[in-house]
Picture 1 (cartoon, rainbow, N blue to C red):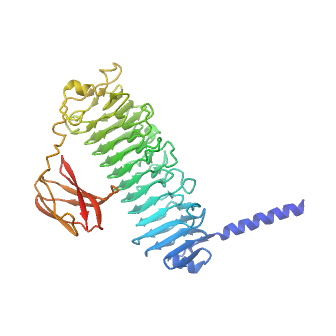
Picture 2 (picture 1 turned 120 degrees about the horizontal axis):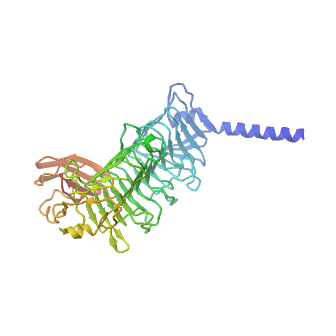
Picture 3 (picture 1 turned 90 degrees about the vertical axis):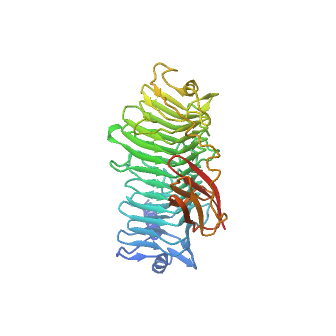
Length: 493
């Protein structure tokens, strides 16, 4: 027995020693370390062949050290390996790829510890276990995250947030096993999620949206702005955006959700819980009906609160072909236009199920202000026609009223010929375009074919010359003023 016990202990000691050898930690001397530096310090950790690097052991960036990639390269990581950062982790090169040695055997991912400093730019991160972001100091810009797996460093999302005001901007996040961005229900985080292209995330088809967030920091505003969020119609459980407070008065939501395009998800947007305040403006929310079960989802916007204290102010949104336009449940509330501070100007078209059109379903006892909206796009409706697409006290005496008069569509429904005489030149263009701004456009946004915003320019009256400075390809140029917009194809040669 003693020999067996000793043998077992020696085995455990040997395994422990081997595991210890499989992790390299930087010296913690305040230095800045590149992959070449780490390869020189530990040839068993990183190997180098030109601009191709291979990570063969777990890597820890110590508290006082900085890891830097400032030259274009590809880093391939062995199965189940984890990069943990206590110090700083900066990627500033123009084109970096981080992938698995074998895409069928993904690496564990990244763990960014509290108090670490993270700046990721121009990086493709694929076939790993995601980014677990425990720090407040986190920025990821112009990166691509695709085909990352579940069961690695994160369990909630490919970018999993825990605190602070992280910056997630100008990225392409597609076809990952988990949602694109998540936070814990009680984490208290207020990220800026802006100008990203999201498609087909949560390939595991769990009951989670592509952006799945809990409570926000008191005093800090969550910003979800100018994102394109496209679903995979083969997935019937995945929503677009959800923000939830399950903690009543001990939690809060403070949010701006503006100028997003949300298409082909189970539902568009879901806000849950009291002590919640949100501006929801100028979003395009269409065809969010992938599950096809109206009692389980399919709303353009769904609001649900078990107690009073939700204030959502919505204007300029467009709802088309969802199972419901807007659903308001229990004690939730929304201001869709009060004739004073909120102009309304939301547009509804063909939202419905079971052969019935539902622009809004007020399943609460609250009176909702909903003035100056277009309830049936493409026509100047009569009052009864509007009444027919709104479910409220008229349909069930226990429900609150939706005050929808005055309503308008003629003003909101832009005539296709409004901009018939507008054009810009040259097209195809090389370095710039010119046009006469006769329609008082305020901004020119240029999007690539994936829907990602690649250029934004403020415009002036009269003649304008706008530098493009874009790679060759097809783009979409959106000219907008305070009330109207037109989108034109732009070819860069």
